[in-house]
Image (tube, rainbow, N blue to C red; front, side, top):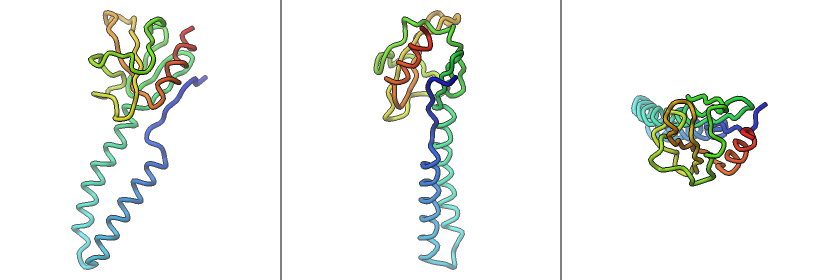
Length: 145
């Protein structure tokens, strides 16, 4: 059973991104319809960078909490490896703690929750970025109890 889930980016975000790219290409092409190469290269390069950024926020930021594991980005943590007493609310994670999921830092605008893993990593703290850290912390505490 899924207790908590965050999917990034939303389909609406992808639709807006594609609409902006198409509009930018059309505006540049309409300005000079004989030259389609420049608009294609410019929108392709800038759109490619922005698209890769959107994709990576999903790759490293999707969160799914089930009855048996916590999946954050690339990482899968069995709930048995999480110390229930260590789950902290928003802002409770140490800023120097590594981010679970593969990202280097939390996305701008995200809050974080802290936890300590009992899996042989010497009880090092970790942080999990989330759009709604209160709900994630509450769901994780409920799953661990």
